[in-house]
Length: 470
Image 1 (cartoon, rainbow, N blue to C red):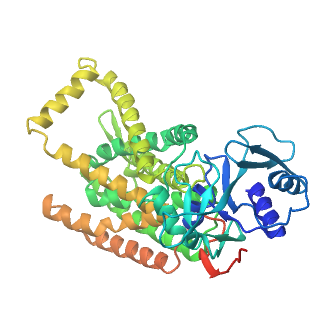
Image 2 (cartoon, rainbow, N blue to C red):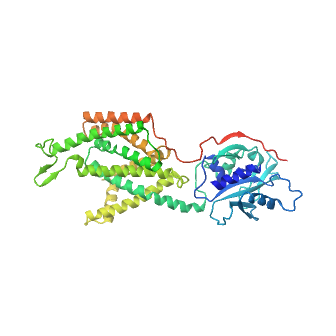
Image 3 (cartoon, rainbow, N blue to C red):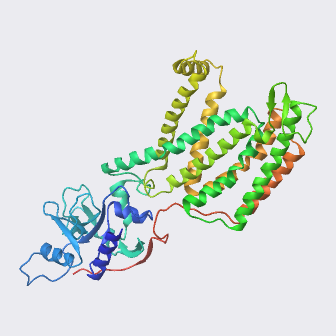
């Protein structure tokens, strides 16, 4: 970035009209910085740029290079392509960041009826090498990397001709991005493993709790998510935000007290409220807060928190910001498949009489035969949830996601009553009211955590300037 800023300052100091081009022009139009997987920034100028060299024995290129070198750049000129590359003085590595300067010459053309003069790129290896003068001039002011720069007058038409109708969507264009894709792919292994454990624990915990209690207990993740969120994104929550989080947690605790008393009474009618342990023969039954099912719920909560915040961090990270979000979803689900296969192999030890292959094909056979029609529906539903969650985290944040999931309580209570005939108790209604209050309180002062797409979010085009050419 610093190299690009120095080049921009140099052109401004020399009063040379320039504009970002190719991928760099797309970065400006999209309000992006530049590509972490690319090593160059593209700037274009009209050549020659207007200085008077009539009495000089040097050609235009040699004079231009000498002027650039005075600003502390190392200049590499490629005669066949008429392309100049700027690097920091003393840097010779090809893979270091550099600024490419593309040279355009004004030519007379009979192919364009609108304007007889066009700008022709001197690098004839580029396919799209001719542009109308009216598409370039007059240049327009824009803000990029915190600097005032100029872009072509009809920049969107230029981008449309070169990159097609999807030019405003961040897309990978270079072969050398493959290394970054592999890095992003393996970064998703951690949240995929956590979500794998979370999803499998969901089936285990749903067999131990009724749906409303299950979703209420999951709201403990809001407080844990807030702590992890502050750590990863270096953002401090306000007092109102913390208050709404604790109110939400209080609503979860009310529902847990009801489940604790219900499970204790169901074990033995002779149990008193003061007994910390319940003994039946040689079996010791612990109260609900220290029960193994509640411990599994805590593990599921922590998996959800770490996975959610870390996924948001990856979606808004500079390294993965240029990778399409659906491609990142593909990375996540591919890693999830691998993690579930590993988990399936580990579970095989619990049933040594059946191999992993038999487990897989028996399950697949039951689905195809129609015996397990709900299984593919659950798969499709969870896949849709995952896709929506990624879009949610991309534009919003993980804390708001956990608050939004609390709204499930309204629908879960009604559906559990309709499908499973589970009554809606008074404490459940009270807990839902408390959770709703927390959601409303949070909505008055939500957390803002937008993705890093630019240095300064300012309007791209501010005003127009006219550059006269003799």
